[in-house]
Length: 221
Length: 71
Image 1 (tube, helix red, strand yellow):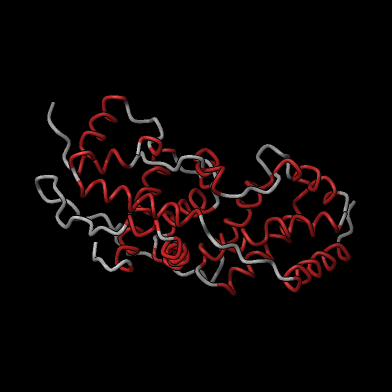
Image 2 (cartoon, each protein chain N blue to C red):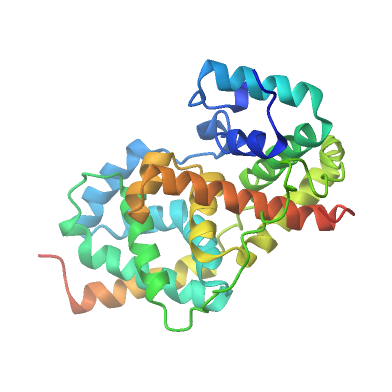
């Protein structure tokens, strides 16, 4: 059997996923959401406050990653909560409240007038391999540095600053999968894309962030 | 590394990939860096919600419910 080329290994690594997604992101007690939604329907303000406390920080983060500006993100979140209280009677519970909420937010973020067009970004994974399928510029090692907790913390802060550099679709998939910890099915349903498309966007987004982090970590690729 | 492959690779492809990774430091480093990137994304700092931010949204809610009381 022919041995694998580096370029082929990359294609196989596209299948990489994170083990234990649900363990990484502390998920609020989703089971309680149905009860809160019922109380919200009945006009219970305390249920609204509880939902805000539970989801607003995550909404803000998702909105900021989508629109690229804190001020616009806050407006998008306000619009989202208004849409939630107006539309809660029409929420049928076919998806989880969280998925519905994220969908409402993404719809608003996308139509936000001040959203910047971010066309023209390279995918970040061109020319990594030469004609023989070997690395054109092999990655300069840094991965072992993240064993140092301080380096890992710096990386976690930095990677979020870098999210706006991704093309829109890649960024949305990366945020929903890797930051929010949604599973692939939820993401394909939210964004209306196929599983294969979701997987490719996720891989390209991760690969581009890796390149950008590598620059920070003192190497060029 | 195996724990990070989600099982959608066939056994044969997985064996080939692992064989390649065992011999190729560049691809091993690449995978390790991808993993570090994913871990960094999963350890996002979520800002604490200020009381002020909650109050603003509650004000919004009250204004809405005054205009359109629940049926």
